[in-house]
Each structure stands twice: as structure tokens, then as C-alpha cells.
Image (cartoon, rainbow over all chains, first blue to last red; front, top):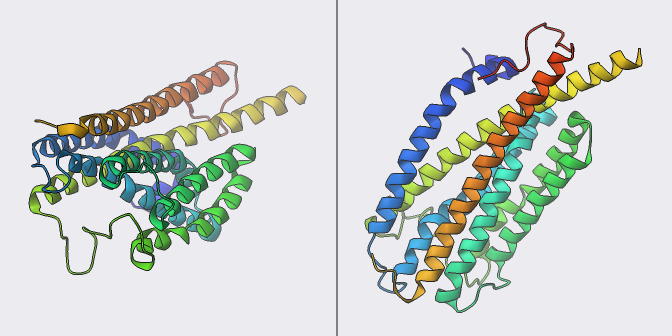
Length: 243
Length: 59
């Protein structure tokens, strides 16, 4: 089976039906290992045990941006190549990305209260991630507001590509502005500043959450393909009844 | 594993992540069943795809 074959929804459904159980299994194993390592990780000399929040906050924060990146690629697929699965991929990813962004904001807030003394600060990093969350909600609303999926896909693709401008702002906000949020400590020039005792569980959790996203996204794409089949059969039914 | 004076913040964070992930999984699983049921209903009423293949025959 080639990559082109995956453009066929029937073949996509068949392939994903076979790989999803395996993907879900590997995801569960990795997250279990990551959670165990997170539980066993030592306390930080400054933060104490609250450093454990990092193991769930950081993967969710990374995924909040990664999912928008995936939707941006799908938006290009919709606008440039009119790929049959591109808008399905974009629509299916939005609620999952919104959930990850919500978790990044809330776990960050719960980490901020004991460490910074406040749940929220209108600094550049926090505000730009809040804007990302609001853009996810706007995108979901747009998909729901337009009945015709292909018209909704084009409008959503444009909004997604405009919203992608926020991604470098989020990433570099801690360098460009004076923020309460700490600068990058893993994905930075010169390597990670994290000790291996924290870095390894963090990376295991990040891979586990990334696989969780892939699993949920493929499953949600299957649902969206079925929803479109329901829609086309309903249209056929209505036209038969009208004839 | 002692979580120190901020245990409630740590436990709430992990519980919230677990709850949201569980909701996502349940939502997707329920949606799959709902779409398959709709397809079966439509096919049972005599509406079929142009290809003639069953739309509800999915693993």
C-alpha cells in the first residue's frame, strides 16, 4: 500500500482499523512507564515535588502547538492539493488540540500558584497560549457553523494558516519579552539544561502523549469519514423522497 | 512517595489530565458507535452507496 492509496477513505479506514489497537497498546505502555518514572523522579532542589507537574504540563504544552502545526499542514492539503483526507484530518484534530491546550493552561496554572505565587499572569507566554486556545474554540465553532464540509474546510484552512503565525510567537515569547514563565530548558540551542533524572521521564511522557494524539486523531478521522458517509446517504434519501 | 506541602496541586493536575483524556477517549468511542448505527439505519431503509458496498461494514 502506497501513501497515495491512503487518500482513498475506504483504504484509510481499513488500514487504521488494523493499526489502531497496536498504537493504543504502545501508547498505554509508554504512558505507564512514563508515569512510573515521573512518580519515582527525585524532588527538585528548589521546586520540591511540584516538579512532577512538569511531566504532564510540558507534553501538553508541546502538543498544543504541534497539533496546530498538523492542522496547518492539513490546511495546505485542503487549499493547494484538495486532498480528500486533508480537511477530515484538520477537523478531527481541532477538539483534541483544544483539550491539550486546555490541559497545558490549567496544569501550568496549578504549577504557577505554588512556584510564582499566582495562578495567572498576563505575560507573553501565558497570553499567547490562551490566544491559541481561543483560536481552537473559534475553529471548532467555524466547523460547526457551516453545513457544507467542503466550504467549511476552506474557511477553516485559511483561519488555521493565519493562526499558525501565533506558533513562533508562543515559542519565542520567553526570549523576546521579559516573562514570568521560564525560558526554554529542553528544546534550546546548546542542549537541555535538565538533569537526566527529569529529562528521561519527560521525554518518555512526551512520546507517550504524542502517540496518544496520533491514536485519538486517527480514530477521530475515522469517525469524521463515517459522518460524511452518513451525510451523503441522508442527502440521497432526501432526494429519493423528493422524487 | 511524599508530595510535600503542595500535594493538592500535584494530585489535582494529574487527576485533571486523566479526566480530560478519559473524556476524549469516551467521546471518540461513542461517536464511532453513533455513526455506525446511523449508517446501519440508513442502509436498512434501503439507501446504499453508489459503489454498492456497505458503509457500515467497518472494524
